[in-house]
Amino acid sequence: MTRIKKINFYGDPNIGLYGFASDKYVLVGNVVKDTSLGVLNVPAVKLTIADTDLVGIFATGNSNKIITSDIIENNEKEHIEKIADVLVLNTKFTAVGNLILLNDRGCIISPLLKKYKENIESFLSLPVNVSTIAGLNVVGSAAICNNRGCLVHPQTKESEIKIIESVLDVVVDVGTVNFGSPFVRSGIIVNKSGFLVGDRTSGPEAGRMDEVFGFI
Image (cartoon, rainbow, N blue to C red):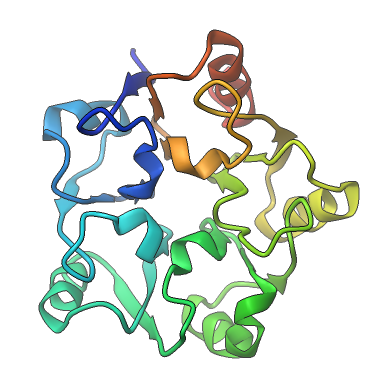
């Protein structure tokens, strides 16, 4: 069974900017045909956030919960609430998809969102840790995970890897996407069934993903 598909959205290999997946759904902007999402083997929900297709920038989530910021419109929030509970953060850091890394077991948030830690922890009913990845605040851009593994920025520190392994309960490895980009989430949409990857991704890069996400 095919578990990987190389793809672009209107010529853009940075597909992670437009959506993300869990083991129950894939949330994505209106940039792709449903048939292209087949490797994920979950229902596709297409929508906008802040009247843009950049769903992967402005939101993130796991199988049961979705987090976004108050940049979202009411009708867009109502659309998302059909598939999962939604937490709207009242923050100037509206690109929360770039600032949060989570799966069904835990969550890492950027230091920029540390004042929301208790709120997020209560909403998710999961452990939440404040950390950087590769010394960067954009923890949601510098890493991507499913419930088995996490691919991280090549300059991620060992201490940061240990936090990810502990909080998310996953195997962690470093890698790149789209022929060298260290901001791996920008080019990947993944869940337990498979993953979409930007079409500039090399064979060795895809092989590393296949391994870390637990498909081989």
